Image 1 (spheres, rainbow, N blue to C red):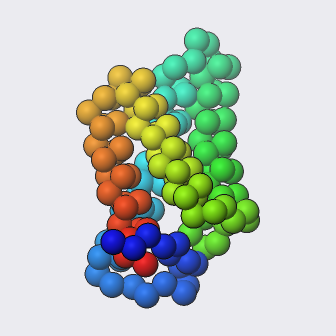
Image 2 (spheres, rainbow, N blue to C red):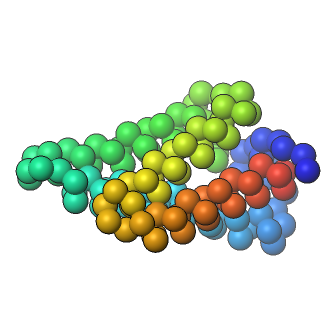
Length: 125
């Protein structure tokens, strides 16, 4: 098994596996934002805190993703091990947010799918 950076979307060689995984990855990215929004609005102690967490957490995740992990080419290129670790960490935050918001089964499914998607992304080229 060879681990490699997949490269920008426009330059990838698409196979049925990578197409399906690309769709899964995009769904997971949207799910991450939804999970953080859900967690924030469920976790805050008051309306203002809920709004700040519910909007701020997904915004912070989106900024992090855009800077370091964007499929079209990130603004800041990290070394490959750091890129993989950060992607797994960001998805783990989404899974933990679902768990903390009272949806442990959904958090587990999200985490497992994210792990599979990242593994496929970096091993299929």
